[in-house]
Image (cartoon, rainbow, N blue to C red; front, side):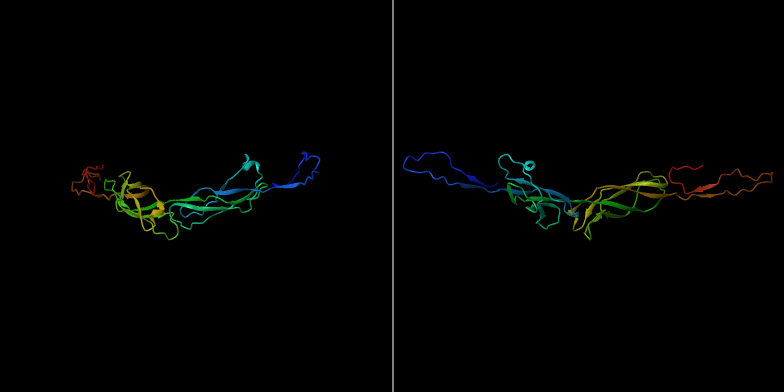
Length: 239
């Protein structure tokens, strides 16, 4: 790239002419490289990523590594939509501070921006229960964690089922299944259909009533009669 002289040599005009050789100038202008945006992906609600770019239009076997390109392109999103989906031609790149000895830079192909659903998690509240030999659990509430701002997205427990992993009294794991999301902004989110938490099964009360006894004095204080026990469930046994 630049200006170089063109010099004519040789040639014979015969005896009737004198050859006057006048130098010319060969001007080589810079070739044009297009700055092409590269497609990108982001999660709904996150900031836009740093957009990348490439080049098209190299000549004579040139490539990025051997053309002395310095600086950076200026890439930006030109489509404002923030909802989940693929936004075609949403990223545009201009020359920015790019320079090269043999090339000038112009905007090239635009690229798509894909916005993927934001993953949510759930928190649960399970009602305490008294031991009843079953694993049935009562789901009191379900809340979503990770929503953006005041988006309308909630936990749908219409078909949810909660089950204790163990029917015995104590702090027990509870599995919740058949969960889903609802709300006006639900299309921008994803969430699992199940989850776990812990809740307490309280011991069932037992009433132990001593059996009254009348007997003739024999020097002992014990009773041979068994107490009455009320409150056992089904075929549970006490001793």
